[in-house]
Image (cartoon, rainbow, N blue to C red; front, top):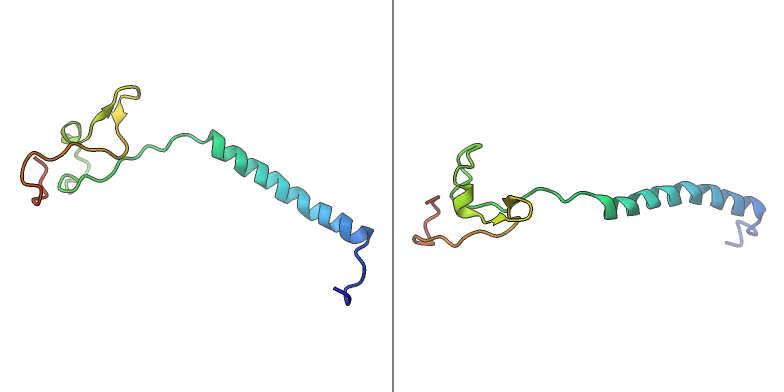
Length: 89
């Protein structure tokens, strides 16, 4: 730091100019954390996901959230048959 010289008004002004856009972007990101919508997802149900775009089995494998009328995010019913066989029964 001795080779760079003293920290003067120019350096302070430069620091403030660089700090301003960083602060603005961080405010935006912090606001996004609290205002973002809940993501719609659910966990994979092995044995039932092989059929492309067929969700007729969904109401029998995943409980429905009564408030939102949507499938639960990461819970499922226990299989009734042999647990080692991955089938969608």
